[in-house]
Image 1: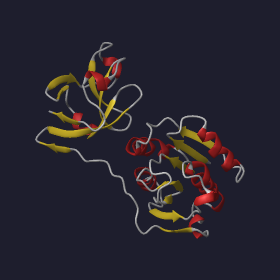
Image 2: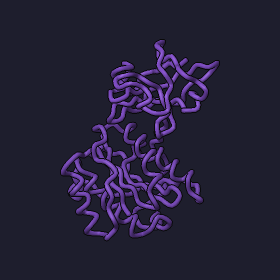
Image 3: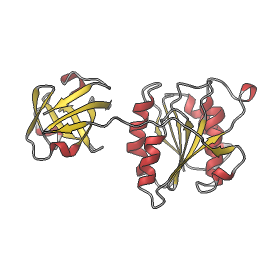
Length: 255
């Protein structure tokens, strides 16, 4: 299996699939192609949440604001998975999560050498660099792809890590990591912070703590623990980010 994820929308992913299909008969599965454009951190968060639910696979990820520059192309072995994409940090959170869930809990990062200039478009490395690399990794196998010509250990790479919240004396200072399509504002505060609480103050205003969105009337605010395990600011049948007045990257204070 090869999964594909990007911020391309349509029709660019079809070209990547065509390139892969010429090289391997791997099953191709789309994760998402509507990540916010050029938003590396948001893509990294959702990949960390989604990819661990797949069986062993090669994961092709192209959210690449630096396309055409001298940033490297990476192939990462993470347990019994491999990830292929640009060296901008987008692969690392998912790689660490995949490795931690595997019996072979290791992350090994390799650089994939490729020809530029006339042989690769400077604006579409998803098609000309990463898709062929993903097909090669799949054919060689997760355990052996690093033995192929043009694959060398990475001496340095961009490592994206999410900020940690500050929790002390019943208070938490966190950050909105992402806002999902429903408008739920996902923070970096662990869900355990809500244990035993019936309500919390969010930036000074009280909101009930509930296990389900429908526990409050439609249009009412609530604080809950999302499927990702973090504190989430939400509205039943509404948009939490608007109701709480927050956006991605904003500080959130809970007490």
